[in-house]
Image 1 (cartoon, rainbow, N blue to C red):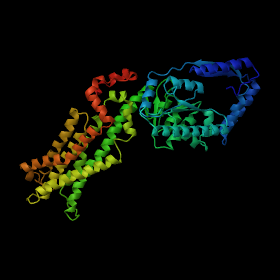
Image 2: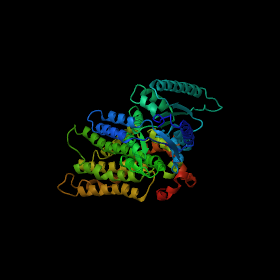
Image 3: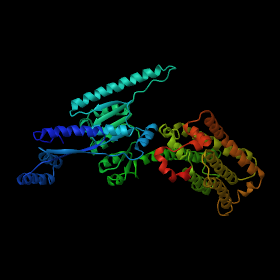
Image 4: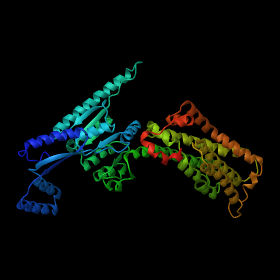
Length: 540
């Protein structure tokens, strides 16, 4: 505004207004400068004609409109300035603190003045007095380049000092890590984004714990999100409440709109909608953690259960000269994935929770298990495949050697393999369930019973392959003893590994579960979540 005012008119008012603006911004108030310009009828007619010509131009419409706007937005007579207190929503400082404790980088992109943005940063606990601030606020490319080069040099120096300090840790204590905060304005971003300076900005930004961008335009907000999204594999989340946040929300991997006083433009462009910023904490730390834990386990379990059954068929092929004959009927092969093992997987994925909501909110660092990929990684996948190979060997060879010299047909042996495989994979799932309820009990054990019933029914239909096969073996005690021996032998390695890992090498999740078990009553919900406790009381 001050770049278009007529400074020859009322210089004392201009000086006082600048002083008041600085004072208002320091207090964290949102400022607005008000000015006016008197136009004669001839001046207005001339401008309106130029504006209509620019707005209907086919080529260069944007440049023409900017030129027309600059023509009328000049020699403005300043009237004064206002400062409005924009209070933070309830729970915003606590929410930001929880997100930072969870290892989530929080960046603020705002249109406020630099002083206002910094003041708000302190009030919401985004900035602290221990942080070293890197301020980039220039109006030329050369100055921005010089500031970025100095910032990169500072970051490199601090990294070297930190590395040297960590290598020289003594019994006195660990070295204090220097926290950096980057403060940059929209004028500087004009010369940095989409230029050769963008890479230097990225290096400085990722080295800082906090990035605060002030006086930024909507497209610049989207450019900052793209800066991280296009250069890293990190998941980006953008949250906003106004129309000027739409570009940023659409650019991020996950967009969240806050429904409030600013309208519903952000909500309509977002993936999720919420009423207040503090609801972001349970969305990420609770539901995000639960979703990661369930999805990670279910992916591994589905690969495991299907591989275990397929490997049983593979071992059989080795004894049939790779022909198309099979001991397991087509109906059993189809129902294995559709009925025998599908329903328990779905139910456990819906109801099982490794930790309660209360614990996840009290200890935000538990969110780090997803960032470290502790529940789904290559090591776990290989281990699941090894378990499937071992269990398939047990399921195949124990009945094979027991009935090797008997007179039962291959259909009877195939029924044993089918029933044994269903029992083993469902008991494997039962060993990994954390929170039991009657629904999980009903579907896991009910599916095993339903499998036995289906096998009996299918073998009772005369025109289907394997007619009466199950009746040739289930009448003897050897059949039931085999099912018990197969289940125990197949699951002993998994049980031992699970006990050894949880007892000798517990992770943060296991420690949290033990804390819930022995100190559950002492775990309190954070203050910012007190009003929400009634909504989730029945989940504990």
